[in-house]
Image (cartoon, rainbow, N blue to C red; front, side):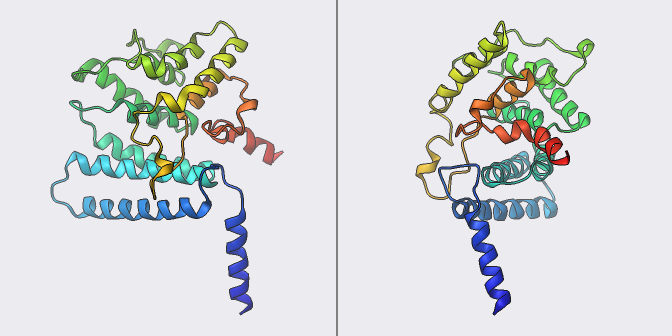
Length: 264
């Protein structure tokens, strides 16, 4: 009985611990996470046993991993765990490469998260090669080499290696405000532009499939502006006033700082 009481009390303590997202409870996220894990395991088993694997199966599995990453970040997952999930997701994402039907939002998410998680150079190089292939070799209909993507990609390259494939934003309505942060003449202007864009970020994405997902059952995994945080990290913008912003993944930007402080 004491063991059962201990397990119960420990479970209750776990449930009472604060989480990063404030729109849902830990139990809500655990319910969604359980479903996503089940889908991931089912899809992975199909791939492992299939004789003929189509690109959709790889894409589905990569997407499942990203959903799991998002839910886990929304609760309280450590960055090392998220990085491991990301690397697995990225592997299947690259396997699902389809030069005829790229999805910009997915590519931007992978690049943004790659920056935030500080993935190894060899993995980041795969992202660079992927986007380069889209820009220079595939040239799918409707695809535009993108300034925002290349700003992020070039941030991990040596000065002499930086590439200039893009001359415009692929989606100016969505990202012109964010690119103003990059173009800002000084730190104060960049911080002001970042805050203004973040204020508009959620409504700018009203056409996204995740918009208002918190109003539906078992659909919400968090609203996180990964691309905004990636730009802030690259530019070393003072984001201390955004620590409690519901859309800004502050811990994803500052995990390395927190690890250093913990060691000290």
